[in-house]
Image (cartoon, rainbow over all chains, first blue to last red; front, side, top):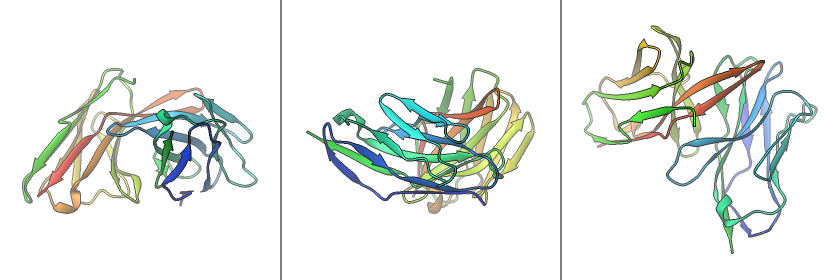
Length: 113
Length: 114
């Protein structure tokens, strides 16, 4: 079945540092890939998505490129802010998994001044 | 904002009592989902619905039932709550645009079973 593996957290960075959160997946076919963000005490918000190989999703300075050859969808941001502190979830949809989203376990990001 | 509300937002109950959580959407989306969120597990699908009175099980459906008698409401019932069902529950809807199917989530319900 489908699976998503994310790097363990928490990740602690200083403000303006470069961020990478690794995400790799296992799926058959051609899944769509997503990053969701969860701020403290809130629900999940869609951050970005990519629906086919080599697509780049981007939003709020975050980017991720759908790499089919390495089955990866790593999240990056060039300069993080304290307000980016949250839990980030990588997820996939389709690819033999039906209509459900398959989530990674989440990576907590803490950004300090 | 996909027009999803959940009620209640917080609930504390005792082992063995029945509990019903409600998800309400305002935009007539066909697909609705219930997930639970637990540390170290991400989100896991409990049940989903693909139309009025059409539902199916997810990966962690034991101990849960659902009902959808109208498009806008999707109810999750714990017939006899157990401490292992202490969790945060999220409802989601699918928005289909072309070949893209994207899920949007409600604000969540925090359930504590004592």
